[in-house]
Each structure stands twice: as structure tokens, then as C-alpha cells.
Amino acid sequence: MDNKAEISRIEDIDIEGVGRITLKKLVDAGYSIELLVTLPPQVIAREAKINVKKAILISEYVRKAYFGEVKNFVTAKELMDRRKNVLRISTGSNTLDELFLGGVETQAITEFIGEFGAGKTQLCHQLAVMVQLPVEKGGLEAKALYIDAEGTFRPERIIQIAKYRGIQPEQALENIIYARAYNSSHQIYLAREAFRMVKNEGIRLVVLDSFIGYFRSEYSGRENLAVRQQKINGHIHDLYRLAVSLNVAVVITNQVISSPDVFFGNPQRPAGGNIIAHASTYRFWIRKGREGKRIVKVLDSPYHPESEAIFTITENGIIDL
Ligand code: GTP
Ligand code: MG
Image (cartoon, rainbow, N blue to C red; front, side):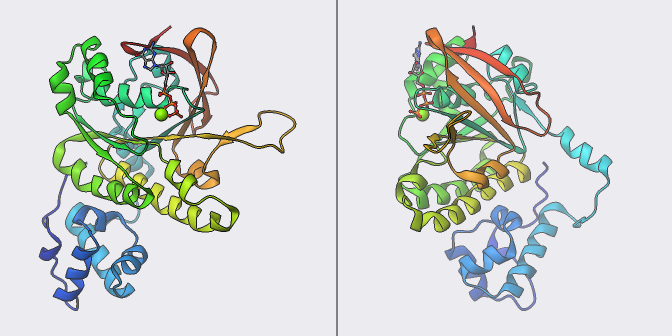
């Protein structure tokens, strides 16, 4: 999406009735223009501790400056045109790409679900390299932002995958911007910082591995469930706005939990409940098969077929069987 922003700093906001003190509160709350464009005014008001009416004014102002005249109604044709801007990142496996209908999409959240060792983190590494490839090789000639909430990112792995894909290892490492998240609040903060990073750095892929880990450990127990789900809700919607407003692919990983009360069918289900289920655009479940095989199944998708793909993990990364 084109960047039409005529204002780049919060200090440039010029609205009657919105003074310096309010603007300072926004700065202090850690906001950037990009974030103000996409966050609901109610959230801005609550977080920056400003009046809701002012938040609405600010929100409308920055959106106009950013996108031009605001259009509330669009035709289905315009909607279709917006969809045309969707870009795809190849996974490096043909069968997987087929299942993903061409690759991992921008303007969407793609979620990889699976038990430990399923290959979620490997896929994240893989995509962080693939996005760098030229378009004819399945990439977007762009950088990746990698938010690591589990401490499992390995530059050595990037080097191996990059070599196999014909990218200079040094270059591949330079093109991945890495941040380690230390707890759920920090993770939320980093996801918001991502708005600024994505715009300034030519990033087309944002990885968050894993989305759920900290929330599960920090908010365990039934009594914390409501707060946890509320936090998860805000966080995943930040990521969705990031994906849509800046035309980037957002990839998150999720764990599985077992329901002891299920006697028929699969007792395993994705963690995070309905909120993640609804907010993720595409959900893929990865299972471990025999002899290093990995089976991927589409969980929810508006238009992907209900089918499976099989890939394998090697030293060179993810490849077809
Ligand atoms: P958790 O984060 O624990 O939930 O698991 P995950 O789904 O992220 O698993 P991950 O992506 O870390 O997959 C780990 C698996 O990938 C290992 O068990 C190996 O089977 C495979 N793997 C990782 N690196 C290599 C490699 O260099 N060569 C080969 N052959 N396999 C590898
Ligand atoms: Mg992992």
C-alpha cells in the first residue's frame, strides 16, 4: 500500500482543540502515526489516558493524512482490487505452496499449529529466507521481522537454508531483523513497534514464534482466563491491522492442547480458544509423520480446499518429499 502520510510525527498533528499535552501523552504511550491510523479510538483513549472525543478526532485526522480522503463505502470491485495487492511468499515446497494456494499471503495472519517438534519454528526460519528471494523464485525481495518469544531462532539455520536457496548467507542474515520478546507485555510492545519497522525497512514478513507461549504461562488458571483472552484479543488484532494496513504477511505459531474430556475424535485442539481462531485468516495444522514426514492440514480457511500436504525437514530447510 502506498504511503500517503503527509505527517510523519505525532508532533505534526494539528487539530483545533487537541493541544500539546494530549500529543505528548500519545508520544509517551509509545505511539507512532502508523499505529494511530489503525488503532480504534477507544483503545487510544484508554491507553494514552486521553479523552475519547479527542481520540476520535485524532484518529480521523491521521487516517485522512495517511490514506487521503476516507472512504467508508467501497464497491466489491474496489475490494477485489485491494485483494489484487495481496502478495505471496513461497514456502519452498511445491506441495505446501499448492495447499497455501501459492504461498503465504500478505494482508493476512497465517497460523501454524502443532505439537513440539512439528516444524513450526523451522517453517518460520524458512519463510524468513524465502521472502528475500526475487519474485520469480517465489520471494518478494524483501526483509523479514522475526519476533522470537521462545528463544529458538538460530542464525546458523538461516545460513544453511540461505545457501541452499542461493542467497549469500551474510546477506540473508542482514535481511532478518530480530527481536527477542521476554514476556507477554514485551511481546505486545514489539508487535506495535513492528508498524514503524515494517514501514521503514522494506519488510514483507513478520514472524511471531510463538504467539501463545507467554500468555499460557503468565495467565494460567481459570481465574486469569478473562484477562488473558482480552490481552490476546488486542494483540492479535494489532497483528491483523499490521498485515492489512501495511500489506505484510504475518505468521504466528500456536501450540496444541489436549482436552481430556474428548472421547470421540481428536482430543487435541489449538491453544488460545476462539479469539485466535476467529482472528487468524488461515490456520494450518502440522503433524509429525513417519520417517521425518510432516503432514499439514488446513484447519479454517474461507477458500482453501480441505486437503493435506506432505513435506520434510532437512538440513537445507523445508523441501518436498
Ligand atoms: P516447538 O517449538 O517445540 O513447539 O516445536 P516446533 O514445531 O517449533 O518444532 P521445530 O520447528 O523446532 O522442529 C524441530 C524438528 O525439525 C526437529 O525435531 C527435527 O526433526 C527437524 N530439524 C530441525 N533442524 C533440522 C536439520 O538441520 N536437519 C534435519 N534433518 N531436521 C531438522
Ligand atoms: Mg518452535
